[in-house]
Amino acid sequence: MKNFKRWPAIGVVAAVAALAGCGGGGSDSSSSNASVRLVNATLTHPSLDLLVNAAVGAAGTDADKASAYVTPAAGSVTLQINDKGGTTALAALAPSLTGGNHYTVLAYESGGAVKSAILNEDFAAPAAGSATLRLFDAAAEAGTLDVYVTASACTSLTGVPTYSFTSPTTTNSVSLTQSPGTYNVCVTAQGDPTDLRMSQSITLAALQIATVVITPTVGGQLINSALLVQQGVYTAARNPNARVRLAAAVSGGTTVSATTDAGIAIDSSRSPALGFYTLVPATSKVNVTLGSGAAVTSPTTALQQGGDATLLVYGDAASPKATLLADDNRAPDTLNIKLRVINGLTGSTGALTLTANGGSRVGVNVAQGAASIYSLVRGSGASTATAITFTLSSSTSGTFPNYTNTLNTGTTYTVLVGDGGGTAAPLLLIR
Image (tube, rainbow, N blue to C red):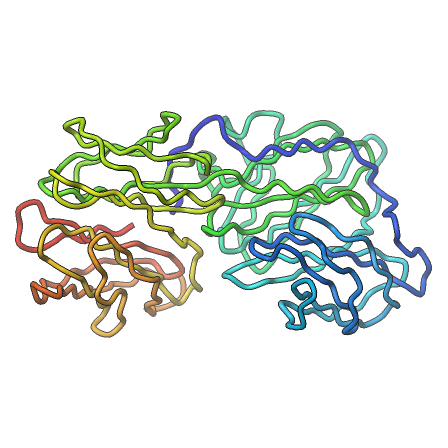
């Protein structure tokens, strides 16, 4: 899912004033206690409690905020994250804390579950006249990423990235030495500087230590970010954008064009076609026209901030319909292929059932204009290409000829079923 067009005027902008790099209020500098605070970077939990050894330590930390420090005794502790006032653990960890040291517990969401990580806040001060910028990547599902720290705009990136996260795991981190000043932190898909996933404007002061925290969004490929100053201020910068692609499936090989209300071109394709993603503000509305110039009623569903969506335009050319389908491009593990099917057929073909390799159901009785849930199909080995034979059947037309495609494990695909342009069998387009 790496190739998509970009709109050159978008980005997450969170200008952060020069802040002191040390001295967190409410901390305990004694050797017998540590200082711990909670950051709520989750997507769907408006307020969280941090429990220390089963007792509420920091209560009611709102989304995109950091709590005050609590001061548990040094040594092994149990830290637990609950919804505000709740009794069910959303996440837990058991670190060994050093007396006099400072820690931030980062709560974020991945795959619909709350995850946690603990960040050290006692890195040594940088050399005189410089600052330390740390990058903390908790968005493993977004894949391998390049990071540019630059005075240039994120829409005109050139040259070698400042840093590359080459092996996504649960979390990755690195420290960089920077001169004081204002920078754009631009995160792209690895090897593709046009595939912008996140941008944030930051200002670093001399002797400051600050961390850009990268966390997942709902779509799996775009990224939220925040700036965490060591023992200082936390400033969230949620991604205001969405990605949308066109699935053109109007009968008769009709050309379909889609733009936003601000005139951003999404795609123009002859049906059937499944296009690439275009980055747009999440507040955008989509406009759809046919090659004849006739307008299609726009979908009422809104784009989701940080999300991916497929704009499906389908049906007879005399009365086409348009709908937005939410996409989940979080990658599966390296042994599996993640698949779903969209029914873009026209007429009396009816609901579709798609089976992979004779046994794995990708979609069952998927209605026209709808998408199945995502399903996992086992590949032939980790990080390898796998030949998949698809069997497609219809509730009214029986079984069609089989289709074989080679797909990569650890990757998410959508299968668009569209009219075959005059042939009896439909077409399967996979991206």
